[in-house]
Length: 268
Figure 1: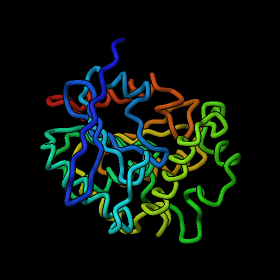
Figure 2: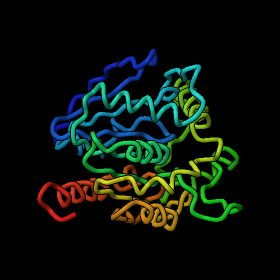
Figure 3: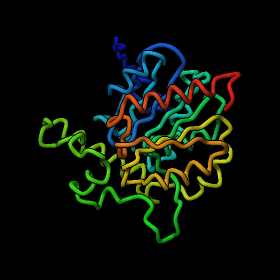
């Protein structure tokens, strides 16, 4: 397997610099990372870059980048990415988002699907499926790290280990956490209006979930998928909140099958 070379461009949008990773060639795959930070260098992305041009922005505040002073919540990121999609002139892109990136992708698709052909949400947050007093999503800011690792990973041994990181890597992990808090804190990890807007998504959608995800369970994922017209739902065994990391080959196969099965002229 040949691994595509990554190229990084810094694109300024309304005074906000955004680092965007480009990798591979083919149909566009607009990749929105989650709270753990950028994913474009991971093995699953290497595999997908053999068939797609991956376009992966780094959310401001992650990977050592600055949070713009005027950013208050996820809505600022959503509208920034609407501008980015226009600037890059995306055409029939597959949009894929992980966790909070899945929430971002869902919000973008609600606003407009003009530049995308398909939507893939992976262990996404962004909605509330239980009652007002139900905790749908584990509080990642209040839960001890050891417990959180067990909830998020089928195999906790695959989780990032801060003790094996450099000081710089630990600092970036902490700054990622600060950015995650800004984007997702209030209301916690969801937009109460989003469920009543998801009907606007008019492209084929796939909701993928790790079977062992204890942060947001597969039942949450099924409920999420049921809110999106004609969305398919699939569970990946032996994987937690990051199935693309724990089961990259199976994950890639799900993605390719979905894209091929929903290609023009094929049944959705």
